[in-house]
Image 1 (cartoon, rainbow, N blue to C red):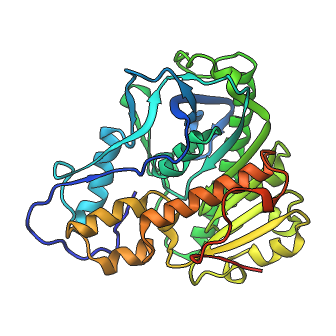
Image 2: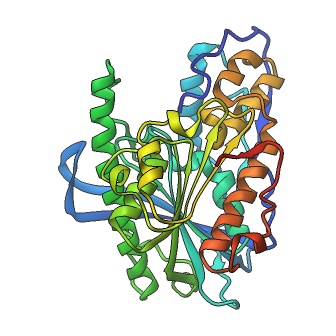
Length: 387
């Protein structure tokens, strides 16, 4: 969760900062449910004594949300851990800054008057919890998609399970490029297996079964809102590599988006025959991304590439929204933050990403017939098409 690893020491005076998520842009109210899933067919590759278990959040169009509690953006314990990761570089303690809530109502009934909705699966960057891409997930849900976000247990910095149990990362710091490569290879295989297992669980859920390991009561009509015949996926960093390889291995995934991630695996040489979009940061051209040049030449499906000017690697997750208020409050320097999240205005950045994600999934999941009809306005000066 290290947002400001390169930050300079903060000024000593106390500050008070409330960090908030931007409003979703769609018309639908948002419901969210957290599910505890256990894959009894697999042992955890990071902790072999136990079966593989995951936490996922399902964000969906909702109805009758009045009076329901709102899901925290980060739970109090995860927020404290996030603050602890920042404190060594001079940021204030969690008592001096806080996260606002999400816009998702816990366990709200699903809105089914418009039938079943397309599903979009999300995989975060290496070490990042699923909660740090909430701005993207909840916005897609506000436009009528069902979004399923994954935390990859024991690789993610911290995953919180029911009852408050925290499972932290078991990955040791990589000491050289070879070890980093080996960790990435193991993580990719694990993530792809996680993704395919979650797709199986979603199919069971759509058929009327409750996959939650603790039998948490499912929101009303949730099964009826899932269209398992229309599935796409997006991911940030290692999550982007997960998208590509999962698409290669599982034809249930019709389209994918890679947000500034390199590639591993057999998809590099085999390519894909389905739509794929890459959005990369400034100064990180496609030809310089490991595996991407070969993948781009091998694939036969629709491929789109945009460069987000002014962006850096953590511009593609909620860290961009967190860094900016801390800079404004004098907690971290603007120079340090720009190394992490670039110089693009974070609200403009998230607006662009939301728009491009929505337009791509509108097109590829059948809401619009072709790219020129998609409403996402794929023409913005900050988003540069890369031939």
